[in-house]
Image 1 (cartoon, helix red, strand yellow):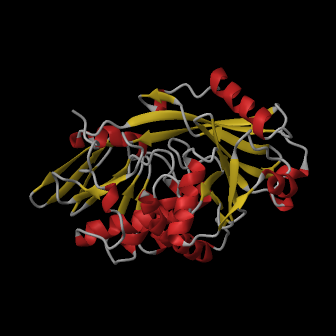
Image 2 (cartoon, one colour; image 1 turned 60 degrees about the horizontal axis):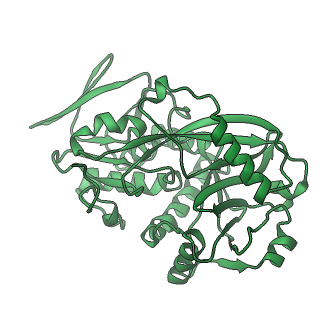
Image 3 (cartoon, rainbow, N blue to C red; image 1 turned 180 degrees about the vertical axis):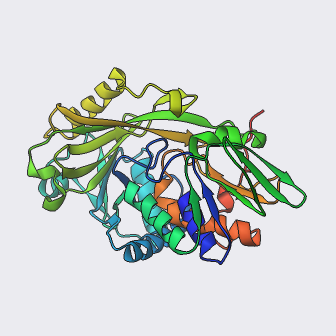
Length: 366
């Protein structure tokens, strides 16, 4: 979000400084690990759909400027109980916004996507415009475009604190002091400290990403395999077609271990997590082997209701922020960067983000 905010602010002719503890494309948050799913029929809440429609436009514009493909519309198959969360939510958004979503019965899935199995009583939906983003390249593309627009980027700048005075903002890093008129905070797991005065109980959740060998063409992108998202027994699993020699990437979106600090976290595989993923594969993607080929860790910064928090700071009128993206925010990078630029420059935005305000019910801690 910070990379996109820097771009949109710089394009408005402002003098922009981007500070980060780590270089672009780092692995200390939730914006790495090769791929993230993108979709329009958003089962979490239909209010996200207009933001996604704008997001697709911005991704296509960015990749045209960057000169490399960033968004791959390989399709997305979503499978779950007809009275669950995912399938009804997808169908509701599709009806409300006229999205290209089709219902598949088990015979359809067996014929079109033989690598996927529908649990007994389950239902499948397919979104043609779904797919994935190449996350590290997306961040680097935003940063490159921001610099081309005049933004200055400084890494190895670990932010210690910030304060607002009458005439501006002071940001203190471990090595320097910076002054500005306005401040945008997109600090990932470090928002828990830098936005502590909001009194919002953010949780940092360790999530594992797994790759498994698979030899069947059913799971290869060039053979038509889509990205996938499953709701199984109240849990959520997702993954991607095989893109390289590591096989398919799969992870559990639900669950996870709450931690305090990614810098000191043990990133080794948690056997219980791996067992859950392998049980899911055995049940729903039986053509995938149980031979792991790679592993990575990312960190969700989760809000209490698992919806984003994007707003002006209620106590400091020179500050705006995005936090609590809860593991499903990456696809919105461009449009939320645009919204943060609006809030910074104009104090408001025409983008429909009112449902993401920080003063919504049930968000602030006691």
